[in-house]
Image (cartoon, rainbow, N blue to C red; front, side, top):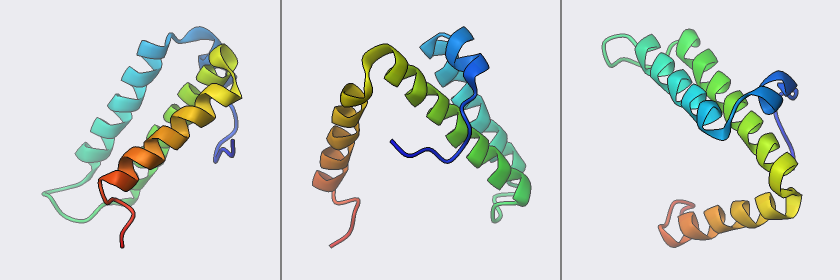
Length: 91
């Protein structure tokens, strides 16, 4: 699996999955808060969006450590199938 950010090994080892997902959600709220008056995103919101991605990558690394790469790849393929069936990928 390709990742965009270095491994945050501190959190892979210390956070439960529930704690890691809660952290990711908090980054989403920070991104929303950084958008002022329902206008376009700001640099600050972009940073928080990417920080959320980093958090989710940490959760994925935790899944790989606990369940293996094949498990995560099967889940990734299931997401692609589900979203393709919903028409998310265009015509």
